[in-house]
Length: 406
Ligand SMILES: *[C@@H]1O[C@H](CO)[C@@H](O)[C@H](O)[C@H]1NC(C)=O
Ligand SMILES: *[C@@H]1O[C@H](CO)[C@@H](O)[C@H](O)[C@H]1NC(C)=O
Ligand SMILES: *[C@@H]1O[C@H](CO)[C@@H](O)[C@H](O)[C@H]1NC(C)=O
Ligand SMILES: *[C@@H]1O[C@H](CO)[C@@H](O)[C@H](O)[C@H]1NC(C)=O
Ligand SMILES: *[C@@H]1O[C@H](CO)[C@@H](O)[C@H](O)[C@H]1NC(C)=O
Ligand SMILES: *[C@@H]1O[C@H](CO)[C@@H](O)[C@H](O)[C@H]1NC(C)=O
Ligand SMILES: *[C@@H]1O[C@H](CO)[C@@H](O)[C@H](O)[C@H]1NC(C)=O
Ligand SMILES: *[C@@H]1O[C@H](CO)[C@@H](O)[C@H](O)[C@H]1NC(C)=O
Ligand SMILES: *[C@@H]1O[C@H](CO)[C@@H](O)[C@H](O)[C@H]1NC(C)=O
Ligand SMILES: *[C@@H]1O[C@H](CO)[C@@H](O)[C@H](O)[C@H]1NC(C)=O
Ligand SMILES: *[C@@H]1O[C@H](CO)[C@@H](O)[C@H](O)[C@H]1NC(C)=O
Ligand SMILES: *[C@@H]1O[C@H](CO)[C@@H](O)[C@H](O)[C@H]1NC(C)=O
Image (tube, rainbow, N blue to C red; front, side):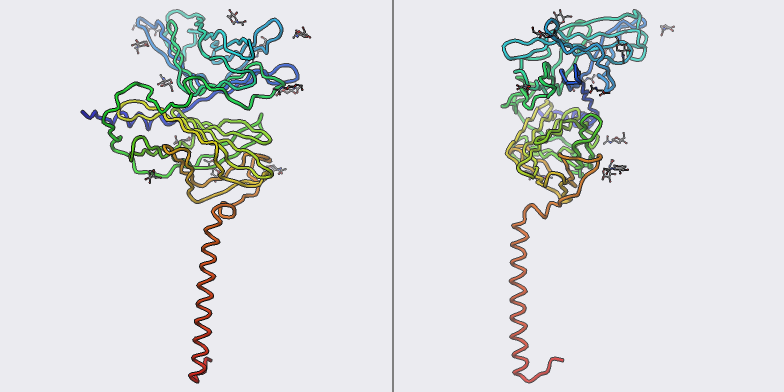
């Protein structure tokens, strides 16, 4: 009954690297942001090569230009155009009605005369593929977010999207604080992506020893200025059935993104199969980690399973705004019963980063678990007192016995 799982384990480990999230903003008059998007896409194109049909796969690269994008106005729809490579582009225009916005037509344009992406192509020409099913309607002033993988197939092209966040019709140049999630991201999603009968769950064999995660240095920028810094090693401990756990170390090369505000800041770490979102907030003069969201795909018993965990009632990593929080010892953040994050060598500063460096650090022992030190201190004090009393009584007895001490 048990299938060999070794290749799947290899896929899982190999898959935990390489993530390309592309961020783009379109600015209108007064430089105000009118369209904001962050997304990961890979394209597979079937084309006629030298005698045979070929497939080519490439990612939407980080270096794109948004030339040709328009904010839209009374008579024109907003258009997001992402140009890349030599003559390729991905564009999406938007509509709005009844307090909601939606993507309208998505056009992928590719140029087979690009010998890098289309080696040996017989017909060198510019081709277009258009579909209209990338987004679902989202309320205005929210960020439409879809972390789930969505594959769109049309003619000779397969486009795979994931970790998509889009906002059009941005008001006053301020990107929305709230996200509206696509249906695929909605809760009750401890569901397998591929349907499978819940049969024997074989743990992945040849499990590597639980090495400690590498410490990643992550930066979120506001324009070109770093506005959030986080150095930390992260390990996920996922309970996928009763008593069966799986450890995943987060790649220290994960892509960091997010945004910074006065009272709220987010850090999003992504690699191919994992997205972790940290939400920091300010209460009075202190900041703390309030919310963690984790989406991860794991291959368990031969099928890919998505785990989505979220906890917005946390209070970790608290420090004064203007300083950084630091903790060398391992900490455990319980996100859900199913998912726990072990953190190592944390240093974070989500607010008021000056000059791209951490400010003065507040160490964890000074502001957390101080009940334990107090208890230990009280116990030590009691022991010292007892020792002192015994010593004094001892001296008195010695005197009464007539001995000299010195
Ligand atoms: C708009 O932004 C560009 C680059 O970000 C900058 O060079 C330019 O001065 C800005 N213009 C205004 C009016 O703020
Ligand atoms: C494209 O991305 C999807 C989602 O991450 C992944 O499953 C698929 O293997 C990728 N395709 C290629 C050819 O890399
Ligand atoms: C096409 O294939 C033929 C025979 O396999 C070869 O001689 C020719 O150089 C190839 N042309 C290109 C452009 O690769
Ligand atoms: C190319 O992709 C098509 C459709 O996805 C698939 O049927 C075909 O087997 C692929 N061909 C090669 C050579 O990988
Ligand atoms: C953007 O488009 C304008 C006009 O179409 C052109 O002059 C300019 O060179 C383009 N810039 C880039 C970076 O392609
Ligand atoms: C849009 O219409 C309003 C009123 O009809 C007008 O004041 C505004 O200038 C128009 N905007 C553009 C970009 O044409
Ligand atoms: C979006 O672009 C397509 C193709 O260019 C066009 O047919 C459609 O009318 C546009 N939608 C809007 C709302 O302008
Ligand atoms: C944009 O600015 C206007 C006027 O200052 C205000 O009424 C409106 O609420 C603002 N919208 C957002 C989304 O901040
Ligand atoms: C991360 O930052 C720490 C402290 O600032 C530094 O010692 C370490 O070399 C950095 N690591 C990388 C990979 O840049
Ligand atoms: C992972 O979680 C399980 C169950 O809560 C626990 O027994 C195990 O010690 C944890 N492992 C690590 C490395 O934290
Ligand atoms: C991270 O990137 C660096 C430099 O690109 C590379 O040397 C290192 O092997 C990568 N680490 C992992 C775990 O992929
Ligand atoms: C910012 O950093 C640079 C280079 O490390 C340094 O020369 C400069 O004095 C710093 N500025 C402030 C305000 O700390």
